[in-house]
Length: 343
View (cartoon, rainbow, N blue to C red):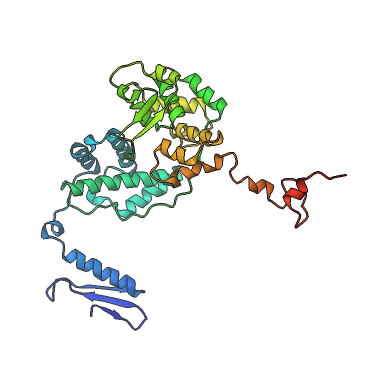
């Protein structure tokens, strides 16, 4: 028996997974379940193929692995350039060390420093997830033969997303500082709820008969959104090829100039929030909004539900003050309270 109780109330794992002549593993745990998990882990490591367990350390730096990832996989992705840009930023934050030196401690220090700089947990989690995905892809393709150093890092706890949207005067201020293709991209986002990247990459063939066809989107869901004749004439100036030539960083700077109070981390996604928020405030249906935005789950769309005109309005009419400033008499119906007195 490899797991035994000890005199001090703990559990001792004592195992030689490869036999009497092999390495011995001994470790104490306060819970039997933890001891059992450790035993299973030792046994799984012992059963790994020789070419994996005896693989020499990979001395390449993280940036070299990124270059490898780009050649074998990243270049095939529609948003590969953006992914590579984010990965380069993450590597700059960590330090371009050999991949073999990357540890959980490095990543924890990275998270702590970025939190101190005001970066949101959601952004940090995305960056770590992206880095882990790079290693996972390289391992899957046989380009990296070491364990994924990022995989076991637990994510930071995230607060519910804050929905920031532009009011009419802010929309007017933004459109006033934009011109040319940048203004057209903003109008597409505000008219359809498109992500900035979806609008910026629009092809002329995707704008037809009062509709914009969004294909190969972020979550893989294709969708078709109606647009006004006025917008179609404005953006349909070309018969083929990309409709717009815009720069993300330039667009974002102009957005911050027009709306300086915009919270950090919102950037161009505020245009998508603006469409969705105004859609609900103007009486739109939450199911229809889900289809327009291309959300995979209704839960994603529900963050906009509170913008509906009648959302939780009973909180006003059914509270102890009856919508006023003085307590109402208990047991008196709302209808009776509202009826005029008969003389």
